[in-house]
Image 1 (tube, rainbow, N blue to C red):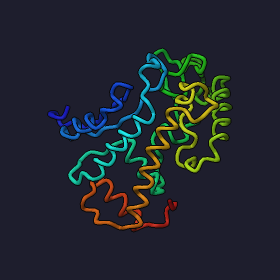
Image 2 (cartoon, rainbow, N blue to C red; image 1 turned 180 degrees about the vertical axis):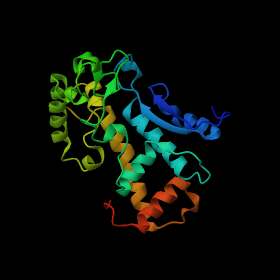
Image 3 (cartoon, rainbow, N blue to C red; image 1 turned 45 degrees about the horizontal axis):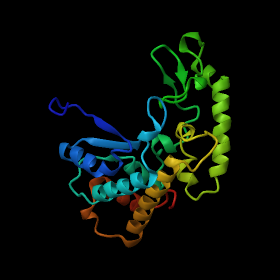
Image 4 (cartoon, one colour; image 1 turned 90 degrees about the vertical axis):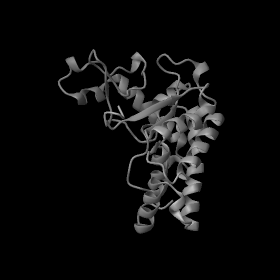
Length: 239
């Protein structure tokens, strides 16, 4: 694809065996100059509990990758969701990654047979919202019993999360992630712990740069542009 000049990115799903090898994975695609996104396996679909990475191991290695990436002045590739977390920490008016933006009634996954689900993360059949071949309009999916159950559990989880200082950045996390970790109405599972550790580090890093105003030449162009944009337009949501 690179030889043919196509624009593309790689989504790397990190499991228990590769959680400690994220730097190696980043380095491989860094040499290729390919944009990379990394996310942990969740126990839905064909994934088993043995494949789920340890939260602390995953977060520690993800922080190492982030620190390498931001100080790579020659990096030509964005790194996700890390860059999205930087933008969220800066208060930019842009959505964070899928798992930490409010997707209710904004997203549908349609299977080849026409079945409609709220998400592409291997939703259990109980959350099937209908079939496009039997609907007059897509909005009918959001009137289904399956969606009402999902929405009710999501609201309950977000109420539990609302007192957390990071809630405005994560919106209570992903309902499917929470479901894979035991219950859609509960929080503080693996995905929550990973986000807290990783995002807190990124938030602290961003705030330190804004406070100390270091020479930005040692940072990659994505960080330089994001920080300069904040300094030029400080009226966006403060961190």
